[in-house]
Image: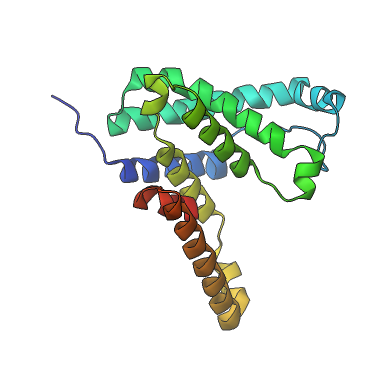
Length: 202
């Protein structure tokens, strides 16, 4: 009997729920790796001393394994190409580490430049100036963005919302909507499709 594929949106909800369950109930999600001191790195020595420490390397390895498993599970449930997912995730993970390393540079941190910006720049550079192999083209970035949104939503506590009061809630709605609409408008100007633009804006 052929297994019925689960739509990607429901797959994301399921994977997000499992990750939240592991993190809250069992505490199994690893600590995220560090790429230098809190104020950022300024030299290669600072990077190597922090990034290639034993504890940090273990965190990188654990992060890779955990997210690799969840990605493969999501691909299996939604019916995506498992062979391509097996090959593409390690590349995506390494590029993510590179983006985090770049964002951890002291001057970039002082400017408030986040990892997501460098991830976007790396993706734009690879997509426009290189010929990507088929297995990388198959990898759906929306899958990770949607999971990120689920995880972000889990950090919002209703108690904190109520403490803000009516004016605080109104202010938050106006700011969030304004920023979201502007980001969506910019994405559409760059010919990004509606669904991807909405997720990037979110």
